[in-house]
Image (cartoon, rainbow, N blue to C red; front, top):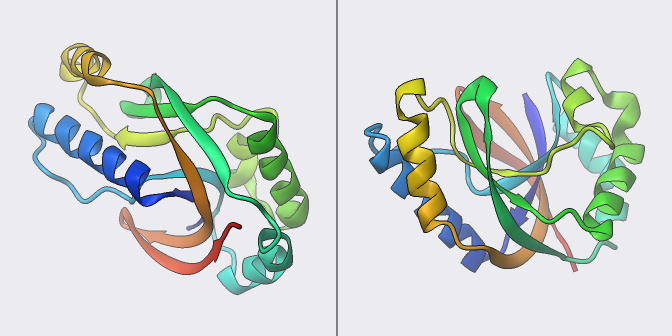
Amino acid sequence: MQVLVLRFDYKLSTKLEQDCNDLHLASSRGKETPLPPHISLFTFEQTNPMILNERVKAWSDKQQQLTISLSSLGFFKQKGTFFVAPVVTKEIETFHRELFSLIMDLHTNEISPYLPGKWVPHSTLINNVPLTVWGPLFQRAGLSFEPVIGKAVALECWTVVNGRAQTEWTHFLQ
């Protein structure tokens, strides 16, 4: 599976990594090796990363870094996922919509939750939390959560296999 993601500046990434580690320890699941902190933009079951690169390179080279204000803590029940969510700004929506227009003919059913108007931008803190710890873990996460502001500094393409990401390419935003 290929994933297009926004990557964060060092300070924001470090903070999210710490939050992820704290939740893993609090959930009694020990330390895992989650994917690096990011916001997923689009996923593909099987797409050639170099074709994606050709489609977005000229556009991404002109894009500005995006201010990311992570102001909400959330939960997806279907996968027991805790996440932080950014304030959705016009800049974030425009970035996502323009990127979609460049790659929309490459999409599969995998892209549908990421369609403009359906996309829920978020950065996962922990996945697959057992039902028995949802309440206590959400309480802990809620008490320790503080809004944080940073920057999205890069657009990356990953190939994800068995929960591990290999970076295929990176375009740093201006």
